Image 1 (cartoon, rainbow, N blue to C red):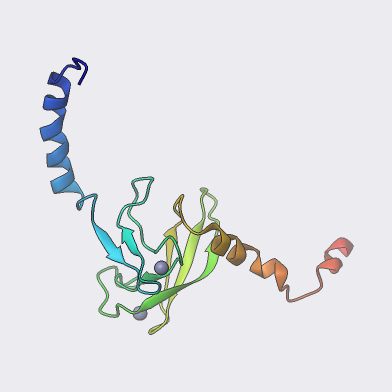
Image 2 (image 1 turned 90 degrees about the vertical axis):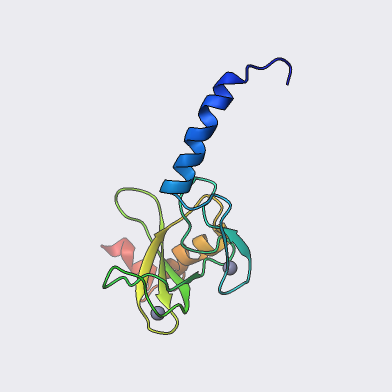
Length: 137
Ligand SMILES: [Zn+2]
Ligand SMILES: [Zn+2]
């Protein structure tokens, strides 16, 4: 302890525990990935709630994107693409393997970078027209 003052700690502890229990689910909460089975902490290293597994980027269809409430579907959602909105950051686009509904979720710092970059460059790797023609525009 090295004579560290105990008072600030004692003052902070109750307020912090109240905030965690009322505003947010427990920080230690986890879920099992629907695809690879990895046990994932519900909150990422940036403190944001995760919507997908950081290893395989799959998620589960639990939110109804059209209605806005919970979804009965609960099937696996596959990452199909990357979106780069103007306000910054990348988002993963998911498609449900059962009902086909689309969803998007922010990328987290520890998400699998290989899968992210692979999805981001796929359109350029397989262009629908010869890229050389761009030089003529
Ligand atoms: Zn996974
Ligand atoms: Zn679905």
